[in-house]
Length: 125
Length: 125
Image (cartoon, rainbow over all chains, first blue to last red; front, top):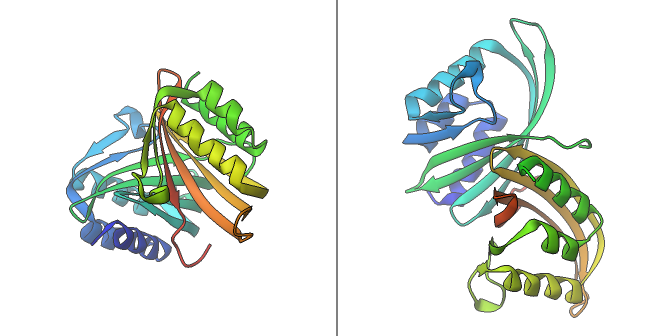
């Protein structure tokens, strides 16, 4: 798949919240995944498909997702960007939160080789 | 300035359409600027502040901008993303167009060292 096709598939699967199908079909086994902040004091960078599976499992087990709004993809060359607006409740703390972030993805050999997540930090939305 | 401060300034100046002030204050002289498609058959990549000034002059001289809606910034580490929705008319062809794109910016030593522009290619917006 080229960058546009991978990007379209990410949008399609995240709209369905089919996180595991996305991991199984679109990600390089050597994926590098970068969060804005480390979860639990570790590195913000995860390396390898198993580490990213771990993050996805954590998300599915810990968050009750009310809605995911997906805007994009924005595509050029080997890069694409998808904007996510997520409304979810942390199952443990019961805290409900609205998160707006973008994913910046780099495609290599038809697979996602790198992803970075950047939260919206502006005053207005 | 750190990444967040540079990002805030880009949002502030593009909301004012102060393109030249942005170039003068926020850009590295060695800026690499990447469009999704080459303008006029050249390379999509421009190198150096003078080349980027040329693109900005072309934009100011050729486009009548009706509105620029700016969403962001999205910020993490040395990277930030800004979403632009531009409504503009090409002064030569008189064609009015609505463009949605993101800029992906990389900050180095307090200046924008790289920018990439990715157009919205999704069916829905």
